[in-house]
Length: 178
Image (cartoon, rainbow, N blue to C red; front, side, top):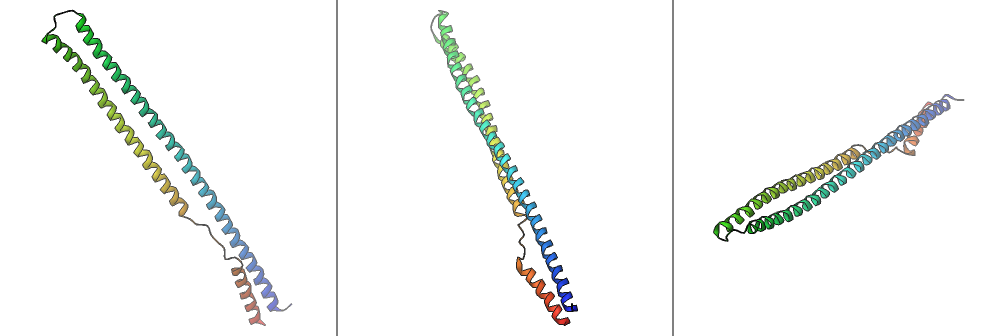
C-alpha cells in the first residue's frame, strides 16, 4: 500500500470519526435543550394553573362578600323597622321628640352600614390588587419562560457537506504526496 493511500485511509477514518463525534455532541445538546424547554413549559403550565386557581378564589371571595353585604343591608333595614316599631309601641305621644328619636335610631344604623360598606370597598380594592399581582406574575412568568427557551437554539450539523469536505481534503493531501 502506498503512503498516499495509507494517508488517505487514515485521514478519511479521522474525518469519519470527527464527523460522528460532532453529530453526537449536537444530538446531546439538542436533547438537553429539548428537556430544558419541556421543563420550562411544564413549570409555566403549573404557574398558569395556580394563577387560574388564585383568580377563581378571588372571584369566590367577591361573591361571598356581595352576599354578606346584601345580608347586612337586609339586617339593617329590619333593625330600622324594629327600632321604629319599638318606639311606636311604647305608646307615648306622637310628636317632634318621637320623630327625632326615630331619626337618631335610623341614623345610627345607617352610620354602621356606611362603615361596613367602606370596609367592604377596602376588601374590593385588595382583591383588585391581588388580581393585578397574579396577572403581572403570569406576564413575567411567560416572558421568563420565553427568554429561557429563546436563550438557546437547536444546533444543526453540517450534514454530509462537512464530511465530504474533510474526505476531499484527505484525498487532496494524498494526491499531493503521490
